[in-house]
Length: 256
Image 1: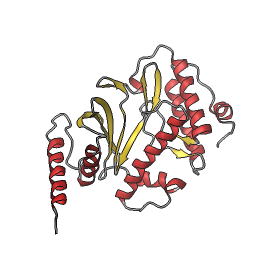
Image 2: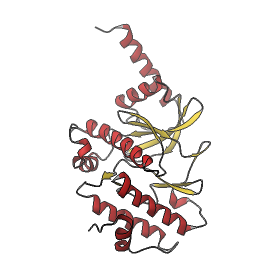
Image 3: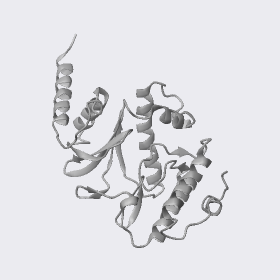
Image 4: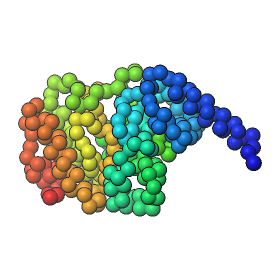
């Protein structure tokens, strides 16, 4: 039997659904804001982590990121798409991660765990003094974090950024990789010019959902791939180092 509190909850969720769909600038499919996403957003709104939703910052097959407001401060809201995200890829990354050994095996459970995983990875990276978006809170498949930008304009991806000293930027990212490996004990796992933003004169690492701990069986291979991607982008912009040299000097080891 339904009670007044349940009816009020359903009413607020319906209002939230109407409000989000009514924002013309979002231009999203119905499956982006499904029931689980709406419930997560409702909880975050009711607790004051989000005051209002704005337009998209970026869209993709696995997640969309939206500009939102929190009491006058811009924040970024990342929503993992429960119906279109690459479930198999997420499952492969999570299965060997000792932090997530007891999660369910259905699509919803894996995507919720992936959201929690990104939140955890961002915290570990930030604690190691790496420039990443500060994670605020998560609920279900919704992650709220610091907005990286000026006013309502997001920092550009590295591939679109203009910077005078490519060597300094390259060296700074190498140092981030070293700190991730040695202090945060993480490997980004998908580092490229698409997953690095550039602003205030520095690179910021983003999209940390797939980052794995150093004891993950594929961590050495992911580390090598990250370095190869970094060198590919900077090869014609500055002096890059040999991968074997980087692995030895940056990490004090030589992953194969």
